[in-house]
Amino acid sequence: MANRRDFIKSSAILAASGMAGASFLSSCGTGSAEATPTSKSFLGLQTYSLGDELNADVPGGLAKIKEMGYTDLELAGYGNGKIGDVECADYKKMAEDAGLKITSSHLSPSIWLYRPDKFDQFDEFWKKAVEDHVTLGVKYMVQPSMPNITSRDDAKNVGEVFNRAGKFAKDAGISWGYHNHSGEFKRIASKEEQEAADKAQREMLDQYAAMMGGGGDPEEQAALKASLAAMMSGMGSSVGETIEELLIQNTDPSLVMFQLDVYWAVMGQQDPCEWLEKYPDRYKLLHIKDRWIIGDSGMMNFEKIFNKAYSIGITEFFVELEGDSKGRRQFEGVAESAKYLINAPFVM
Ligand code: MG
Image (cartoon, rainbow, N blue to C red; front, side):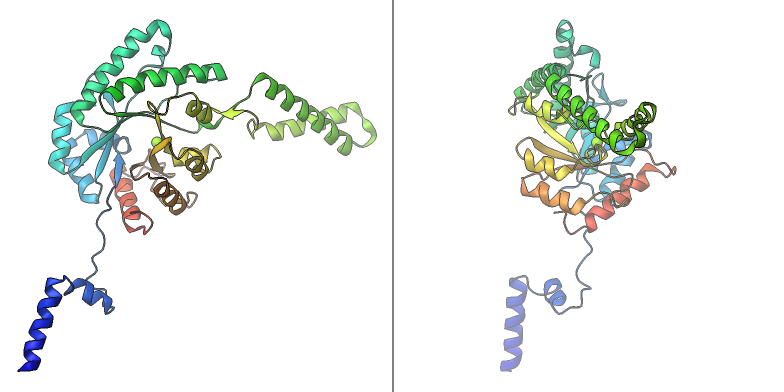
């Protein structure tokens, strides 16, 4: 009798403390009660990844996105008060019905408006956009397209215009950000830096030609120099500051944050982790992107990227896929990418 009473008592304690069942079984090594994870605390998707496949049936597509395990959306396609063909209020309702949160949105005004004589229209664009994004309920508005920047003065002017846009968003409680591609990692040298670099290159070519060009034939030396110069021309300038750096330096941290597209950073010959390390207070969001399906190419060190991002307080990221060169459906790539991240132990 005593044994039976003790058994009932200990079962009750186990149940009350939540130890009965799954965790008890899995600690015994059966593993069968440990469910495969179906999502993460945050798993964002940039809807651009789906393009027309989503536009064809927004409510149906959003339901599929939710089913894959995504929790949050970053929209694309804002214009004329709509997302694609859908009114902002309707889009919000559709996302809510699907159980998804609209956290961010990509949008850009015409590059044409980046000049003082067009600022009236520029301001009008952002005022209306902010109003519509309040309706959508976003935390972030992000510009993904780069105005023309070929000099340091250009970068300074663009930085000021970004601040101007950021102010409209901030007044409505929304963070305004800028998203890179690879062009932002092009370097812009000051006149002095360029002159010094050109001089160093001329000296190096002279030394090379003298070393290689036996007999000192001027024609042969010229050909050798031309050949080395051609080999080096694809390497891009190694002097000066990158446009990304100049934009960070020329924007007000209280008005402008940055979203790092980690794939485009790599395509710009950068280590995304170095940028996160250098500017932990400026990068607030990530684009998680690969050649197509996340984790497939092997050229992106996502474990290192996620660890670094979490260490500086970034918890929000959006998966992004562009078109597939093999012609597979975008929904397939987006679903495979979710699977990869859900199964990745380094994603929270
Ligand atoms: Mg991107």
